[in-house]
Length: 98
Image (cartoon, rainbow, N blue to C red; front, side, top):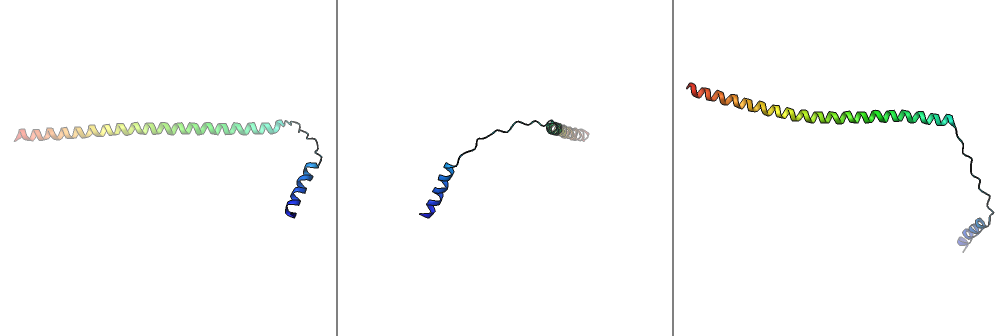
């Protein structure tokens, strides 16, 4: 019973306590502080711009690497075909000589 009596008494006391009127705080403008934040934002914006440019460079480099790989593969295929053709011509010349 004592465990329930104390919380009930505290709740009743809180309900009966008179309330003070709330007062809103006036809006304060600090131009110096705002200027510091604007300068900081400008620095971050410049860093973000550089980061985006770097990502674009990386994307372009990957695309160029892909194209280069394709060209390298095509050159290799052409080189292999040329070697096979040369071997075939040499084999045909040997047949003609004999």
